[in-house]
Length: 190
Ligand code: AMP
Image (cartoon, rainbow, N blue to C red):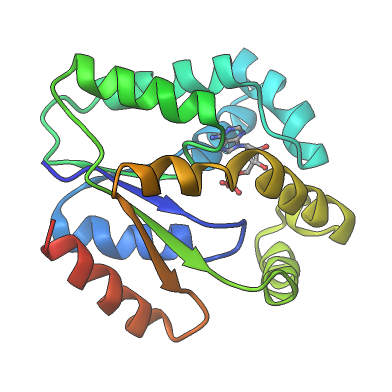
């Protein structure tokens, strides 16, 4: 079973590469951002709660996010593996994920980080905001706040996974195809 974390700042290409890896390795793709957006669209109580945080570019509280993620994993007990996209984003999410996977005889095989400079990401996100209408992609201040959340709360996970020998850094500024090829090479060796 190959359980992979796609790691990187907003706009680094996690969603795009997750779609590719999912098809290549028959994995289940779970994007916590997508699950929150689905709940917002359907006006569930989870969506209402998440919206207040997402609109500002803040992280949704750990307890809510962890519970939601675990719910998504148990929906797919037959899976050959998972791609976690946008989760974990804090140390307590990472610890909860490890504990939850261990309880189910599973573990993380690798964390693949897509590295892209913030100024390039701002341009990418503003463009994506125009195309998708996503509110948190349309305002540079919100985008910068998402980077600040990443740098403060998510970047420490680099050490967390490096210590476990699971952290792989990939230059995320090349073509989609060349990045996909690098990721594939790593995943094939897991
Ligand atoms: P994304 O689509 O991954 O860029 O996520 C969009 C927004 O959803 C983030 O800015 C957060 O507000 C929220 N979100 C997604 N994943 C998480 C997570 N693992 N922990 C907390 N908030 C999250």
